[in-house]
Length: 223
Image 1 (cartoon, rainbow, N blue to C red):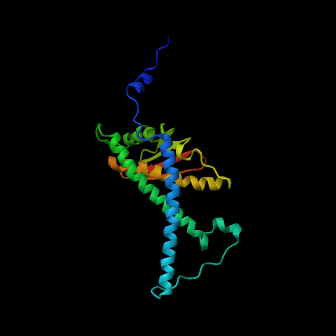
Image 2 (cartoon, one colour):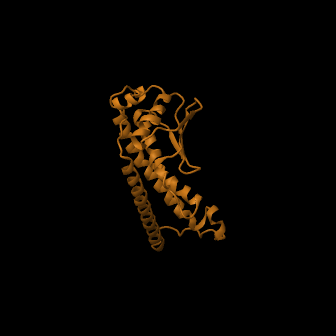
Image 3 (cartoon, rainbow, N blue to C red):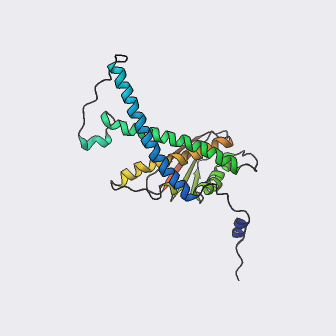
């Protein structure tokens, strides 16, 4: 009978903490995105109605006329006119999802680091994110970690679970657009975890090919 490798025995003796059930996280994210999109649309409609009422009452000047309507074929690349509304709403949804993620990530980090000493090196805290935080949230470690040794770290997950099943009948670009909403909360989780540990930085997700996702983390050079 072949003996089990030492790494397997170590994992059995001290299994990684899993604070979130994988399926639960998927369902939560789907419902959070849908709920916040509806909420953002309702808030935007309410704000437009208030503005119209104030214009009709003479309290504020009327808005300038919209720019000339472009050809519908060019609407995807236009940034003026009516098409700016959905983009603004999606940006609001991303911001709110990231804010939720920051709160969740901070609590995750506090639970995971409860019995360990403080981090003194930025590379050590990034390794913590790549291994322990990733496993506790998404049941696997980061596939690739790169750094320029100047405070910039690139974390790559080849099959990121929150976007693993995203698709769209409208094509690849629409699927990528939807996926950007679904990585906002994970980006917030990473940022919140770093902040709670004492490392303030920025986290920028990037998706070029589903289901691959890259997170660029920038930390101050003196950490």
